[in-house]
Amino acid sequence: MKKLCFILLIALFSCEDHKTKTSTFEDGFSWNSALVTATAYNSLKYQTSSNPNITAFGDSLKPGLKYIAVSRDLLNRGLKHNTPVKIEGLTGVYFVKDKMHSRWRNRIDIYMGINVDSALQWGKKRVCIDYGIPKMQD
Image (cartoon, rainbow, N blue to C red; front, side, top):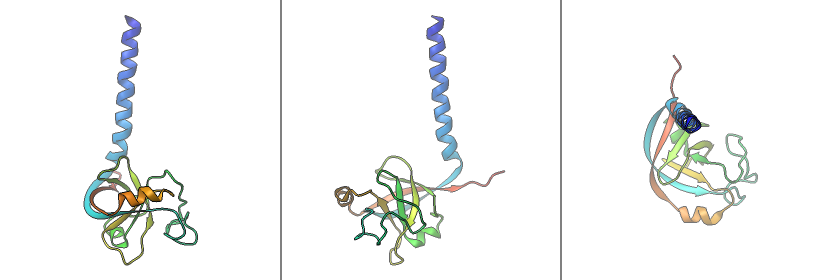
C-alpha cells in the first residue's frame, strides 16, 4: 500500500511539473491573435532561391521543423524573428524563421520540408493565429 501511494505521489508531481513547464513557456508571452492567409512552402530551389535551406534571417531549414515565413507587414505587428505562433488547424508551436517577398500582405507561409504533396494539400486558407510577444521582466 505504501508503494502504491508513493507511486501515485510521484505521478501526480511529475504531471504538475509538466504543466508548469508548458505554462511557464506560454506565460512568458502576451498572446495576440490575427486572421491571416496561410499558404505552405517547401525548401526547394524552384520555390525559394538558389539556396533553399537558408531563410531570409539566415536560419537553416530541415524537414520536420515547425517554422513559418511571414509577410513583411506582419513583422511590424510583432511577428519578428523567433516569435512563437500557434496556427488554427495545426498542432504545436511554430516559430517565425523566414520572411516573404514584399508583395505579400497579411500572410504566413508554413514550412513543410520537401513534401510538396503536403504543401499542395494545405493549399491556401484563412486561419486565425496566436502569436506571443515576450513580456517585460520585472
